Each structure stands twice: as C-alpha cells, then as structure tokens.
Image 1: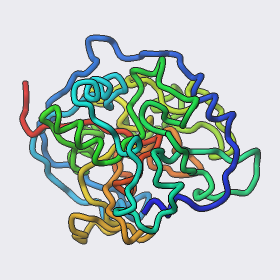
Image 2: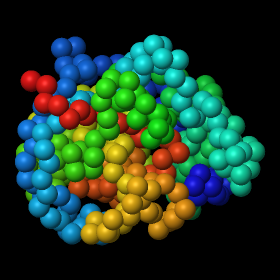
Image 3: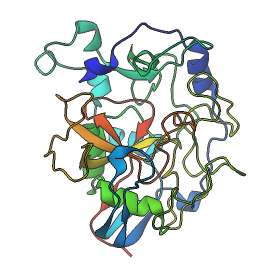
Length: 326
C-alpha cells in the first residue's frame, strides 16, 4: 500500500529537483523518422530469467513467446499529451485517492500528488523509506511537484502514471501492456542468455550504453552522461531488435502480476512479501536510479514489484499488440 512508502522524515532535496527541472538538453535524440515507430517481434524460445543475480529472477528456464508488435521506445510526454487532449483523461495522481478505497490513509496523503525521489543530503545515513516522499500535485505534467514541468522534455518518457493510467493509454490505441515474458524476450534483442541487452559488458564500460546512475547511489550522481534523471528516448544505441532504452532510463510496467518465486502462481493480484496486502505488477528494465552499488536491475532478466496504485518519476511504459503488423 502507499503507506509502505510514506515512512521517515522529509529530507530537503531542492538541488536535485531544480537540476531535474533544468536538465533540458538535448531535447531529442531519436531521428524523426523513428519517433512512434513499432516493430514486429517474431517470437521464439529464449532463456527467461537469470541465476546469477537476484533470487526472484531464478530459476532461469527456457520459455516461448508467440509473435507480437512492440513500440521501439518508451511512450513519451508528447504522445501521452495527445491521448489526454483527445480523451480528457485524468491520471490517478491528478485525482488523488478516495477515502473509500484508502480508509486508513491520512487525509494529507489522499490529496492529488505522487511519490518523488528526494536524495539524502551529503553522506547522511538514510534508507529507501526516506528517499521517497509524497509530494502534493506531483503528476505527469509536474513530475517532481509544483515548480517542475515537462517543457523541453516532450520526448522524454512520460512518468508519474499508475498501472491503470498506462493501461488506459494502451487501450486507447487498441494495444496493451506487454507480459513479462514478452518484454524480456524483446529486451534481450536476440542475445539469449546475455547479462545485458547488448552483451556482457557493463553499462558504462567504454561509451555509456544506458541511462543509469553514475556514482555512488544515492549520495553522488556524477551525471557523466549529462542526464540527472530521465533522458529523451533513443539517446543510447538500440538492441538487436531495434528497441531503445530497454535498459535504464525508466522502469516499465508489464501486465504480469509479481511474485518472488517464478515457480508459483500468485494469482491476478500477485504477491510482494514487503507489502503483502497490495496488488502488484512486475516492473522491468531498471531506471536512471539503478547503480552499480545499488539496484543492479538494469538487465533484461531483472524484475521488481510495484503497487499498481503508486506512480513515480522513474516508471514509464511501452505498448504491444498481438498482431504482427508488417
């Protein structure tokens, strides 16, 4: 539940927020002819999972997916804005939470708003519960709350969307969110069993291959790639299937309920031992907050549980369709 994230004292992080707000260059990386493009994935057999890292990624096993069509990049702010303009859609963060659905949640946390990452000051001791704070009026238009906006970031991935928000966009297009297996198969780009979507070399050995945290998380962000937070889609080389940012940038929603043991069926609601009473889906791909010293989940096999009602500035999505188009 949202309460899980609402612990700890507020740590003032205005420097981080302002840097996120002012990080507006480059405004676009993707060639215009590739913007909004989708590709067919023919499907096949692959190694699903990995035994070398976190326990919830194992056991690795052979799995099969049928062909599908997928966005080559994460859904962007400008794409989501078109959806909102045509439908009048209001996201969950803009509406706030009802007392009927969240009777135990304090009133101050049911107002419109969302979760925002606030890095700790200097080297002060901290915990994940302190890094995440509920900020009133944070939403997809204002990812870090009042004073932030998406001007100049039209081609960045849209964030601060709950699972229902992402699903609504996909349905508007006659598409859907990918299953975990589909997403992982596509993210591997044909490199069956490799650690990363480009092979086994680490993300920042040589030229940066993905937008992840550079430095010691959460205290030191070296910003060696020029990005404080998200980057415009397509700033890093695509994988073997022509997909961009399947590693890092923002986590991506999948439609698969999360469970810590791949061999068990946890039902439609999934199960996360850390928040056992909430409905959880599986996130894939890692984000700009994943670092070598923390959350090494910038890999196709990596996965994370996410409360379907909680949005954040490091979670986005892409869509798929059953039909092979070309």
